[in-house]
Length: 168
Image (tube, rainbow, N blue to C red; front, side):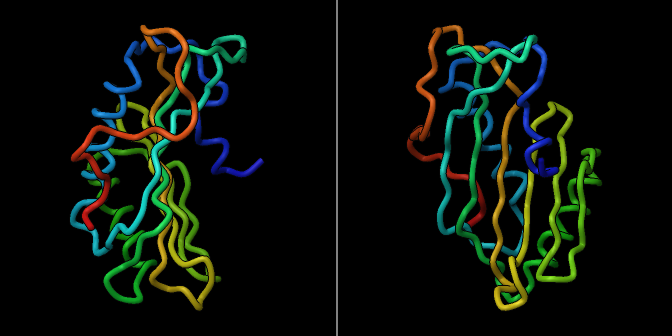
């Protein structure tokens, strides 16, 4: 299992946070945007999903979920994706976030994963090979939550109008 998979909430205890998917998404997208703001990158495309997460006994239920954001098309302003990831690392450390994974890879760009004080996970990776030094990808997810509405519509989720993570 990869370290990226371990950073999620697949085996988290029963969530004490009770929020609707709409409320959770509306609160989380600005956090993702703030985490990326000021970095030298443009966001071309992203995706929001509601994902399952496990309860106290590793069971899955229809009312347990997390918000997951995929930044799958982003570019650094110059061919410096690795510098963008390093700038994010410094900024997140300065905010007091816990860096749970950092690999300054030689084959294209660094991988970074961090947790904020609310236990949300932020991941950013630069250049998948040396031929793509400006390419960036990121995934961001919340802690597990319980929906007061019952069953959650898992899968792609359309956030409220006017919300968009990232500075571009």
